[in-house]
Image (cartoon, rainbow over all chains, first blue to last red; front, side, top):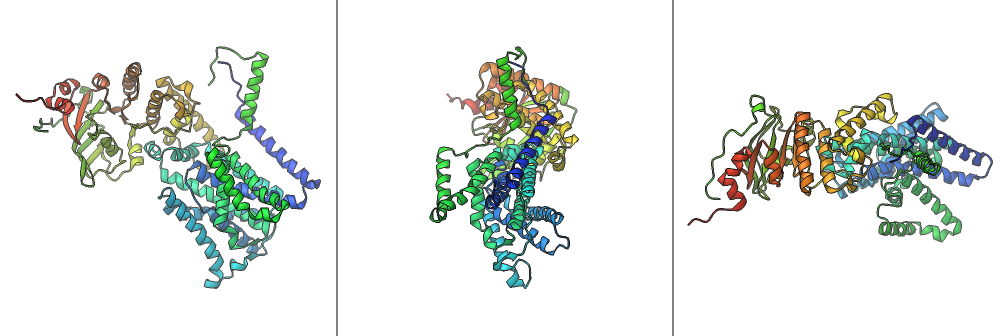
Amino acid sequence: MRQRVQIPMPVRYLINGVLIVLLFLLGQVLISTGVLSSYYQKILLQVGVYIIAAVSLNVATGYLGQLPLGHAGFMAVGGYTAGIFMKNFPIKGMPAFVLAILLAGIVAGIFGIIIGIPALRLKGDYLAIITLGFGEIIRVILLNIDTVLGFKFTGGAAGLMGIPKYTSFPIVFICVAVTCLAIHTMMKSRHGRAILSIRENEIAAESCGINTFYYKTMAFVASAFFAGVAGALFASYLGLLVPSDFGFMKSIEILVMVVLGGMGSMLGSVLAAAVLTIVPFALQSISQTVADYRMVIYSVLLIIVMIFKPSGLLGTYDFSFTRILEKLINRVGIHDGVAKKGEKSR
Amino acid sequence: MSKMVPVPTHSYLPERDVDKVPILEARHLGIDFGGLTAVDSLDLTIGRTEIAGLIGPNGAGKTTVFNLLTKVYQPTRGTILLDAKDTAGMNTVQVNHAGIARTFQNIRLFKDLTVLENVLIGLHNSMNVNLMESVFRLPRYWKQEKEAKEKALELLSIFQMQDLAKYEAGALPYGAQRRLEIVRALGTNPKLLLLDEPAAGMNPSETASLMENIQKIRDSFHIAIMLIEHDMNLVMGICEGIAVLNYGKIIAKGTPEEIQANPAVIEAYLGKKKEG
């Protein structure tokens, strides 16, 4: 076997860092030169929010292998937390928004623990049902808490109005990058491997000494945390939150993104979230009647994917630019005849 | 079954283990599934560095015994002492932490993960970086990941599998999957290794090298190994003490020679000779 070139770790991080910065600059240039009109910018922000939502749901669905149906509930918790916080916090501006995003994640994470501890003792359909119930309970509480308990809190059915609008391309981009990076580094560690082992075979994981309940909860909470972040961005993007935004269909929409992209593939979630967020706008530009059949198109799409590629479009494939680079270098190495023979690759 | 041959009260221990605390002592162990008694009044002693065999006809309850020892099932009756410590109230995870690792009759690998990742999951508890250290890639993360990887490759090299590290576990041939399960179990740093039909599906030459390796593992890790196996060459070849299970009860214990000559064992396997 020939000597294979491996890019050392620091260089890998450098390459990825440069790529992220380039992507960011590209977005900034497109916006500042006016190539992307404010209409497209808005779509771009929504894409970012849904990428975070889908990537975070992928932790619970793709990596942990459970089927939670209440992801919109966590988004709602995050969104309302951020909204209420920003409205009442004395300091305004960007620092308050960053704090609000963190707080939204933390509160959603706490809800993740509260829901996760009973729910994760159940398996399969039962977990789906209990999380579905949770999502609906959150929505109903947000809808009624003001009228029933006399708070001036969520705005009830009229919605929480006047949330400062800070969501902009840079902050969404940074949140998407941080979310993807954090989930990636978590999954490529002993914690991530423990989470994957539960998906693969729970009994074997237990007999390897892995505290499955602890790691299930960890994955579930991580999933909820980033859903809360997505909710916060969503709140400050719209400036107005209505409980009906976070209904059952929203959870399903996010789930469709994850399943379509391939459960367990981060790139799949990102691409599917982007495509499925853009599609409705594209349909709308064709005609309103077509756009009304959005959910029908989703379901047909899902059925087709389930028939021809049940593991989702990308399966569990994950994109790594440096890996592709390594392959290219190694291939070029063969053509140049520099490949050393007789050495084993490790 | 007509006449029961009396079971020896003291099971066989290899000489080097006689004066030491046995690694495992099961007393009057039993489990009922509804009205069915699957295992009953099981007494078992395994020496600290013994290779023990558990044999018996199909459906005798051998795997159930493993499931009892590893607390996949909670025993209805009896006690299990692991290294003189009672395991009552422990679950599968805690029993693993206390020192029992196992393989499975129907292979339970993490099929979509690589061979290396499978072993690293076995090594999970030998690492202690916390979540934040992992997410932010702090120095301790790199250090432990590197050490764990080296350790995993070292364990894989017992079976000359280090070159397979990057392959998907599910893509390995059957025999290699069985060996990988043993490596993964060893990763959890056990004191007692339970092997459920380690040679199933292996050809004679693979079985021969497996026998060597089981002994090598015992000698280099200084652990006890108990195995369930139908391949009598393997059992008689490497086991120092053998227990024979039939209908959930131990019908004989002893050295391979004693077991081979035991009329109750022959009856359980071959049936009773017709009188007259």
